[in-house]
Image (cartoon, each protein chain N blue to C red):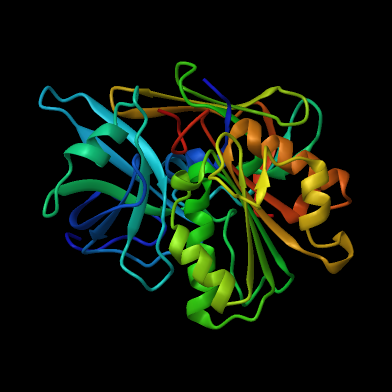
Length: 253
Length: 83
C-alpha cells in the first residue's frame, strides 16, 4: 500500500517547501509540493505537524490559500507566543520538508456548481485565507456568481493579498470593501472600525436574494458577524462560519 | 483560550471516523438541537478535545489520546450522521 492513499483515510505525508512569499510584516505564504495530494476544494484546510528533536509534537490546522487545481499553499500569521507559527514564518526555508495531512473539511466549502446564490465573504484578519481560495476558484472557473468581500484588518499594511484582492475588485466584478480598525493611512476614505450590524446592513446582499455567506476570523469576530447577519434575516443555515483562536490560525497559537 | 468550532477538528474526526465529518449532522442528547458538526463549540486543550452543543452547552463528544490511541466518548450525542 506504500505510496497509495486509502480514500477517506487521512495519512501524514511529507511535503517540500517550494516557495516562500512574504505577504505582510507578520504573514507569509508557503507554497508546497505534496507528492500524494488528492486535490482540494475551496475553503478546506490541512493539518501541519512539527516534531522536535526530543520527540515533542505540535499540530496545527491551516486553511489552504490556493484554489482547487493549483499547488497547495498555506498562509500563516506569526503569533509571538506561538509554538508553530514562528517556525513556519521565520525558520522555514525553500526546500525544507514539512509533515502534513489533508485536505480536511466538508462544511466550509464553496462549490460553484452547487452554490449559485450571490456570495458574501466576511474576513477578520487572517480569516481571509480560505476566502482567497474561494475568490481564486471563482476567477479560475469563470463563475459568474456575484460576490462581495468585506475584510476587516487592523491597518492597510496588515491587509493580506492586497494587490490580488484589488484586482478582483477592478477586473472580476467582486465588490471588495476594507474596514481598518486601528490605523488608517492619511486621506483614507474607506471604512473604519469593526464590522457591525449597520455596516453589514449596507454591504450584505438583501436576504431575499438567497445569498450564501462565508465568515472566517477570530471567534468573537465570527460570532458578532454571524449574529448580525441572522438579525438581518439571513437563515443560519446560509451563514457558514469558521472560527480561529483569539488571533491567528485555526487551533489557536 | 477561545472556543473554536468543529472545523478545527476535521482532521481528528476523519482520523477517528475514517471519513469527512464536519458536514455531518449531530443531534444533542440533552436539548435535541441538530446541526452540522462544523458548528459545534470546540475546546482543543481541555485537556483532551471537548465538543459542546452550540445551543445548550452540553458536552457532545470528548476525544483523549492515550499512548497513541484515541479514546472517544460520544454519549452526549443522540445521533450523528449524514445531513
